[in-house]
Length: 397
Image (cartoon, rainbow, N blue to C red; front, side, top):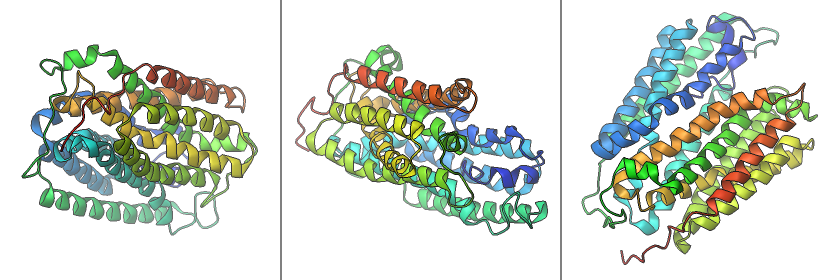
């Protein structure tokens, strides 16, 4: 829902009442990281207290409601932005429940994979959100012969109706089947040393190290994709329209991330190890980011994008599982720890976008890419210092 306008920004700009080329429209896709920066940690704590059905259910209602309201204010950019912020707040509520669901429904030896499945669908939603609008577009693109604001408005309204119907159907399905806990929940092992408290969690440097990994990772994943349309031409790679090179890179990132979320998290559960995957993922992410940001060879860029998605994007569920297994976190603070990770991650995405532009010199993004690579190498070095959490105890479940 929040990526509805990501690939049709130029087409949507005149429909929303903005002048062609007005950069303000970028706020529509910036709504998600802004909502996470403001709400993620308190919403995570709220999820630990109130449970999956209340928090994720309210999030689904907010996304559907504000997504539907966009239909009635399509000519007003600022009202559309308000709707984007509202549905992004709902997205925070859903995503912060990922760890809560894994802890309460699955034994420890299956939790990284369970979190990986949730991450898979989150990435699938992002893939659809960033591509479905373009695939549903049936009128000339902005700047092409035959484009009119009236035809674009009708097309956008059709897209918004389709998204609203899909969201409403998924929300109804959620309330039909969702429960806070299964009839026979898995045994929740006493991981936390002493009484679980957010204060103790926030004092744990290992929790902050893992959360910094989200800061660096989201900075790459969201920041890099935000500059693709200008980065690739600066390297001599054409952009073009339709299913262009930036779209190919984004699709490869997400589809490889979907595959890796299942494969790597499943293997992590099987071998009861987290740390090696986190180190390998951050290392591969740093190297692949440098290649994507400096290579002028399309095929090499595509290959590096797939590697980046498979290793960096897909270690997110492993990192969330490792957070939940920290001695100051445990199952009781699974939502709060996810909230902290997503808060710092989206802060990294928001600040990263600003830093990438600030470090741009002329038409070159070299120093911007260098910032991303250095941030990821720092994450790798820090992760190497945390304890292994995957085998703290052997479970007989």
